[in-house]
Amino acid sequence: MEFVLYEVKDAVGIITINRPQALNALNSQVLDELDEVFSNVDLNTVRCLVLTGAGEKSFVAGADIAEMSTLTKAEGEAFGKKGNDVFRKIETFPIPVIAAVNGFALGGGCEISMSCDIRLCSDNAVFGQPEVGLGITPGFGGTQRLARLVGTGMAKQLIYTARNIKAPEALRIGLVNQVVSAELDEAGNQVKSAQENLLATAEKMAATIAANAPIAVRNCKKAINDGLEVDMDKAIVIEEKLFGDCFETEDQRAGMGNFLEKDKEKKLKVVPFKNR
Ligand code: CO8
Image (cartoon, rainbow, N blue to C red; front, top):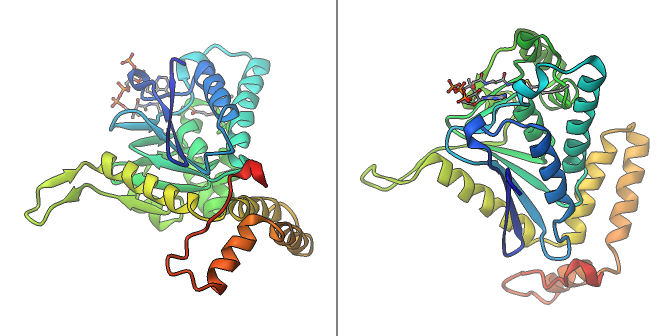
C-alpha cells in the first residue's frame, strides 16, 4: 500500500494515513486503501484499532481538493458515496476505533474522526468543516455526525460559518474526548512531543479496551450504535438481546468467575474470539 500503514501491537492495530506531502488528504486511492486495510484486520486477534495520520502537522486535511475540483454532479455524488461507505465501515466496524487526531482535522478529516468511536487529539489539533467556503457541503457524513455529536445548533454554526476551532474548543463542545500535550519531566524538559504522547495515550486506551471481554466490548459498540438509530422502546430491546448474547460465552463465565473466585488480578481469561 502506498498511502496507508498498518501495524499490530499485541491486540491493538494502528492504522496510519500516510500521505504527508498532501497533509494526508483523502484521495480515491487513500479511501480504497483504507477500505482494504479495515477488510484485512484479523478480528480473531485484534480487539481495538487506533487511526492516525503521519507527521506532526496534520491528521487529515480533508478530501483531496485537486481531485474534487473537476468532478461532475454524478461524479461528486459517487465520490461522496465512496467516502461514506468507508466511514460507515469504520463506524460499524465490530471492534472500537480510536481516532488519534494529530493536527489538522478539516473537512473529510473531521468527518473520518467522527466515524470513529472515540477522539483524542494533540493540543495543536484544528477541527473544522470548511466546505461551504469551497462551494460544497460536507460530503462524508459531516452534516449528520457533527449534529449528533455536538448538537444541532453548534453543528449548524460550525458548518455555516466554516470556522475552524482549536483543540480546547473541540473539547468544550464535546467533539473530542481528551486533549493530549507534550509530556515533560520534573525539570520541564520535553520527554515526549504532543504527537508521541497522543499516540502513546491512544495505544494505552486501546490496550485497556483490548484487555476487556471482547464479545462484551463488541456488543456494547453495537448496542450504542444501533440503539441511537431507533426510539427508546426499540433501543432497550436491542440492549436486552446483546446483553443476553453475552451469556454462556467464555467472556461471561471467566469474567464473573474471576469475581466469584476473588481473583486478585481480576484479569479476564478470555479465549480468542474465533473460539466463541
Ligand atoms: N486536498 C489536496 N491537497 C491538500 C489539501 C487537501 N484537502 N490540504 C493540503 N493539501 C496540500 C497542499 O496543496 C500542499 O501541497 P503542495 O505542497 O503540493 O502545494 C500541501 O498539502 C501542504 O499544504 P499547505 O501548503 O496549504 O500547508 P499550510 O500549512 O500552508 O496550510 C492548511 C495547511 C490550512 C490545512 C491548508 O493546507 C488547507 O487549508 N487545506 C485545505 C483544508 C480544507 O479545506 N479541507 C476540506 C476539503 S473539502 C472536504 O474535505 C470535503 C469532504 C467531503 C467530500 C465529498 C465529496 C463529494
